Length: 305
Image 1 (cartoon, rainbow, N blue to C red):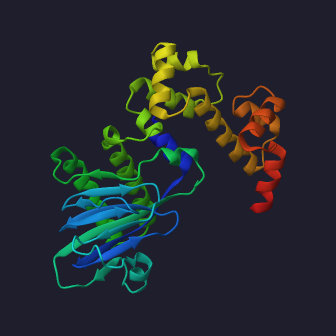
Image 2: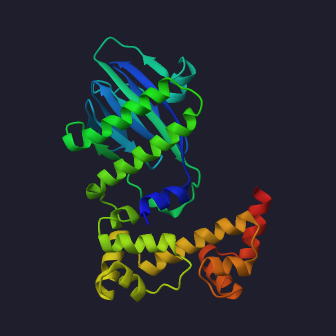
């Protein structure tokens, strides 16, 4: 079971389009549309990216940057630090198709900018995504796989045809997954992505996501990880940021929420589906998780649809 692929299915990944930005310095562009997560590839020239009040990060020709947390950020030429950023929505309104031109008189830069969303915006796994992952164009090993993705995505985005939305969604998902995998060693914050560094913890995470209904204990998850109970509990907590049974609890509750919203299954069926032996056990766990009963949650979900 592939944890990364499983989580992308759970979070319901979807691509939201691409633009070719042709820019001449000085320029500064803000990306602040709610829920949109960025894909930026510098095809020509150089620039820098800034998240809120962080220090600017340089980007050079051939660099790819993924911004998977939907945080507001700015791309700008390196001589535009005092320039007020232009929102992408404003540029898009004045553009023709997938090509955006923002003119100046200085150095030329071309950036392929894409966006993606996770339709399940409340999925707890989103908290484990890094602010950004950068793939350097100077990394020869990465450049080999990156070039194929970018060339295909660019061609499909700028020469659309029947089924382009499907093609771009599949290519974008593959590109984002491949980039996250490439950046595993640089992930600093605790979470499932950092947990994937450890083969044993990764096996336990896969078991939790694929077989959450089983009667797991710390000992049985440690066996799945092929580690001692003590070593597994320590490594899981230190990398993922929470104990394994708490992570399992949240996984089960997320699935219970989905089934309750769907409204088709009874509470006994849902209890069995998410690893609880009875309606009473599910109700107690769900109330501990959400502060409300499964029945009340289902009613509220039904009235808000």
